[in-house]
Image 1 (cartoon, helix red, strand yellow):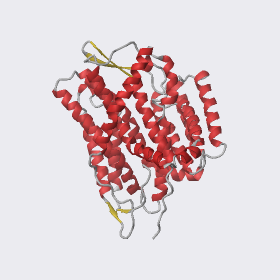
Image 2: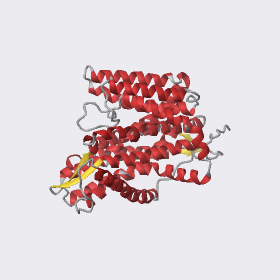
Image 3: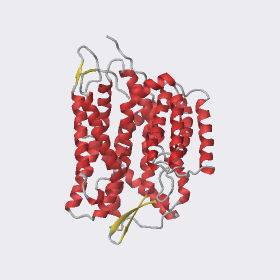
Image 4: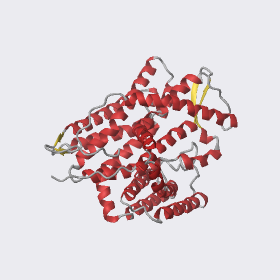
Length: 436
């Protein structure tokens, strides 16, 4: 019997993931400017009115860090499993870990919209709130696709190394040229896979030790120079997230400007790995980081729900004053707003995290022949439905999108069925917990 030893956990990766998710929460809360006028709630993107705040997106655009951490974690997990577990078994369990908590969120959003329809909430308001609470789900179908491709991508990366990352840079630049010059906007959607996938691949490189020595510093310098050139001599804006009315949005779909900035950030973060990991050796610090990392998925999924609920209650009742966007008083109120939402979000995530979930299968298992078809079908349906929900929201045109929701339910059930086809192998022990 061949046993695979799990490598020591990189605590710094957990810290990066948790910190990045916290930045996502705060960033979304800051730019969501809610008002109540004419008996209706309205939401405005503050970046459309506060132009100097575009520079703040250089700090709050942290999705590259999440993809980097995901690539690292999945390289660890697949490296530990590939000698004793088929692709389907590994993927089914990883996908289950994402889709189960996501399903709780989707179910809650669906029930909430149904109740709002029953009590006669305005269709326009409901559509806007449903869109705001679903937009961040765009991450999940893309991440699930990268997860499914991980064994092939990792094998290819082990063969060609950082040349694979270089290829994503070149192809992303070609896509941007095709979008801007001959005006082929649909081609731009390829950059969701090329740009975010490139950062995922950098997670592989970090795990395999390719980002050592002077290379991270070269990445930081090269990324900075490239980014400056792209925003000064090129057509790309400073803001690393979409701004209403802007001709080019650096994040939707992602551009080479966002890629360049991400390379800078990743280079700087990797250089800090040694000192921070030494700092995390202190047991109390590590326990806090580990607890935060376990809650990261819940924080990401649920962070917009308290904002919508608080806005729907506080502003109509006049409990939260409305002031001109971008003024000093407005920024002070933003701080109070963020503090209030943290107070609401943390117990909500703890409550949701305490709900019972389907039991996880043994990590050491045999994968029966055939059910990979079920798994692929389930993942495809789930990803399609999540992408549609992220684009249109939980209540497009003020109605529940029943076909999309049924597609999602069918997809998740197929994934769970695929997980259920795995049978523990006789005489084997459960592997050590993997990084999720």
